[in-house]
Length: 344
Image (cartoon, rainbow, N blue to C red; front, side, top):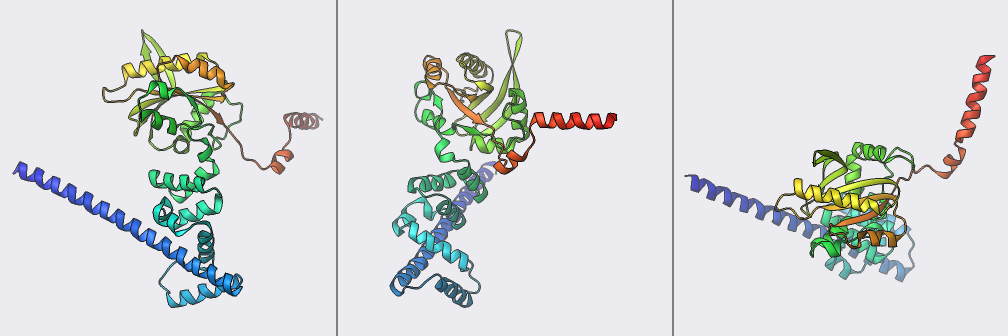
C-alpha cells in the first residue's frame, strides 16, 4: 500500500506539473494573440489615416463604435487605441511574434515603448521581465534606476576565479553603481548607519540587489582563533548556490579592503559553506571606487571571487526646494537671534 501511495503521489505531481505548464502556455498564447490583435487594429488605422488624411479624431470615433459593438471587451478605450497606434509604429509583426514583446503583458509593453527609445534596451527589459517575473511597478522602478546601464559593470576577477557559466552569472548579478536612494540618510553617513538603514529597508535593498538574494544577517559573527570578526552583510544567492559577503565602505576604495574581504570569504567557505555549495563571492561597495587600475592590481592575484562597485545615496529633492532650504550657518544665526530675544 505504501508503494501504491508513492506511485499515486508521483502521478499526481506529474499531472499538476503538466496542467500548470499547459496553463502557462495557454496564457502566453492568449497574450500573444491579444498583442497581435492590437498591432493589427493599429496597423489598419494607420494605413487608413495615411490614405484618407484623417486626424486623431477618427480614433475617438473608432473607440466609441467598437465599444458599442463589443461592450464586454476591455482595451478599446481612446487611450488604449492610441497606445496601440504607437505600438504599431514602434514594432513590426515579426518582432511581436518572435521576441519577448509578445510574451509580456500589454501594460508592461506600454511602459517599455513609452519610456525607452532604443530597440536593444527595450528587448533587454522585456527579457528580464520574463526571467524575473517583474510586476509593472517593479519594471518601472528598474527603468527609472537605469538598470540596463548598471548591470554587469563592476570591476571583478570572476573570469579568473570561477568556472563558466558561474563566472558569467556572477558578473550579471553585480551592478555599478548601486543606487540606495530609498535611504533617509545623508550622503556622508558612516558604514554602520548605512548598513542599519539597508536592513531596515530590506525589501527595497533586495530589489536593488536583484533576484536570487536571500538575507542571512548583518554584522554576522565569525570566530577565528578565539577572536570574533563581524561581516557587514551576509546573503545566500539561490541561483548561484553560494554565500555572498557584502562589505560597505563610506569612503574611497583602498587596496587593503580586498585583503579583508578575501579573509572573510575564506572563513565563510570553511565555516558555513556546504559541500554542494559553490565558492562564496565577495562584493565590496565603496562610495568612490577610485582609479580602476588600483582595483585591478588589488584583485589580480586574489584567488577568491570578488567584485568592486560604487554606491550612491541620492536624495531626490527638487532643485527649487533644495535652494530654498536654509544652510547650517543660517539656521545657527536664526537660533542665536531667537535665544537673544528670549533672554530680553
